[in-house]
Image (cartoon, rainbow, N blue to C red):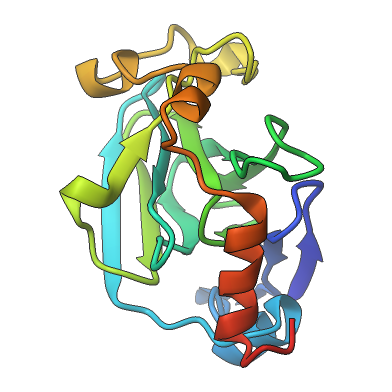
Length: 203
């Protein structure tokens, strides 16, 4: 597989090698050793999630308190989405910026987001099925959101997604500015120190 860092530091696009024959296709969509080499520390997996969304559904922007936070390894097993990583770490050189990866069943890519980064996606097809491997279990009191329609963030949804469909919770989420003012957002230096602790102080 090929792993490349995105324009948001500590997030990565993973492109597997697909091996096809007259029976179908085989691929490795997750390899702990290759990911550890890329990110500089092992990924502990504590939960796996699946969501199924109709075309136009936007989920996010979601993040969790650090530590422990939730690192995410995300792929699509049916349909297609645009997956977004948003830098919400106060003090980061790329604070407020974002990058995107198309996840579908053609290239079968995955995306990895380190703890403290914001995550969202928009479904491009009906029954878009997204599977997540995450580094900690869901804890409602430690989970937060930012409105994905916040013009300050400026996520761009492709025309093929149609009209954005959001949950009431995501629609009511604060803007990036309001989340920062209320102290919800992670601090870049603190999060980087947490990454170093996962690497045994080497990162």
